[in-house]
Amino acid sequence: MAWQEYEGKKVYILINTREGTRRYSGTINEVTFMGKSIEGVETYFLSLTDKFGAIVGFISTQVQLIEEEK
Image (cartoon, rainbow, N blue to C red; front, side, top):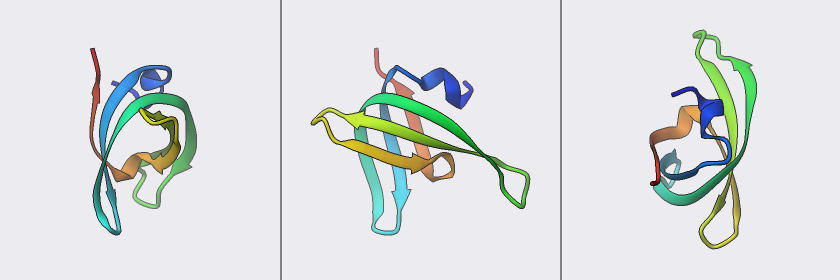
């Protein structure tokens, strides 16, 4: 699934951070193409509103797992 297809959908997501893996459940608000890395990997910025109403932002290369919630 392309990153843009997650926009507006409820997801469960695992994000790799400096402090370890973070888990979020919420709705993807926006997906923005940031460009390609030196290695040629496409990078996206994702904005998510979690189940508590907080807005979280992260880069697609940090995503360990993303699943659409049914």
